[in-house]
Image 1 (cartoon, helix red, strand yellow):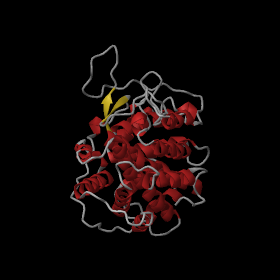
Image 2: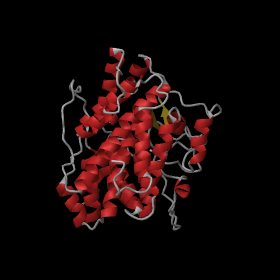
Image 3: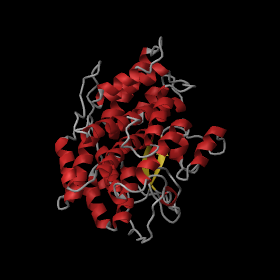
Image 4: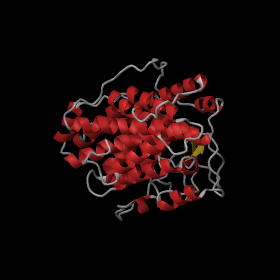
Length: 390
C-alpha cells in the first residue's frame, strides 16, 4: 500500500493521491461516488484482492447509492470487461455508458478507476509475494461476471513500427484548456498537449497528474532494476494484455537500451519463450506474464526463480511496480482509443503495419524522463506527432 517503505520516493504518495481523486473527488460530476467505489471494489475482487476491495468500500460516504439500475449495470459490465480482458474491450462499452448519461470526463474517470485498481492490486499482491505472504484470495463477486474471453492480437499484428492512437471519445480541445489542465501539462516534461492520448486523459487532470508522477518514478527512477529490464517487463505485459501500441513503443525502447533489436523482435513475436536461454530474462518473463493474469498467477516459485537469477530486493520491487504499472497503462490505451499506423506525407494510408526501419543506435546514456520523452511510453519520437505514454 501507499505506506510501504520499499517503494520509490513519491510512488506511495501519488498512488494514495490518485486513489483519493478517483474515488472521492471534490467534484465527482456524472459518475457518483457510490458508483466509483462500487467499480473499484468489484475490480479489486476480480483481481483477487478482497481486502483491498473492503478498504475501497470503507471510503464510501454514508447514505450514497448507485442510482439508476441501468447505469449501475453498464458500469459493472464495463468494470468486468476492462478488468478481465482489456484487449476485448471494444467501443461498444463506451457507447453503453454514454447512452446512460455519462459524459466524457465520467467515462475517463471510470476507465482510470478500473486501470488504477489493476495497478494497485498487483502492487499489493507483488509486494506480498516478496515478503513471503499469500498474494491473492480469489473471490466470486456478486453477481458473477459474464463470461469474458480474453482476446489478444495475433503475433502478426505486433510491430516495432511507430503507431498513432485515435481516441474513442472526444479529447479535450488543445486550444481550450482550463487553468488546471494547462498546469498539469506544464508540470511534466513527459506530457504534451499535442498528444490526443493526453488530451483524452485531461478530462480528469488530477488523475493524470498523479498517474504521471507514479509513471515517471517507476520507469525513470535511477538505480534498481536496469532500465532495459524495466522495458522488457513492460513489453511482456503489453504483449500479454494485447496492447499493440504499448508493445510497439516499449519494444523499440527495449531494443535501444539493450542494443539488440533482434531480441526485441523475438520477444514481440514469442513472448517469454524467446528468453529460454537467458536465466535472468526467463525469470523476469515468467513473473511478468503470470502477474499480468487476472487474478495474478505469480507465486513463491516465480519469486524464487528471480532471486536465483540474481535480482536484488530493490530490483524485485522495481519489477513488481513496472509490471503493475502496465496493468494501468495498457487498460487506458486499449479502452479509450485505438492504435493505428502512422500516416506519412510521402505515402498512402497503410491498412496494416509496414516493415519497420532499423532502430538507430545511440551510445549516449539517457537516464532521465526529459530525455526519454522523445521516444517512450511518455511520448513518441520528435519526427512524428506525440501520442502519449502507454
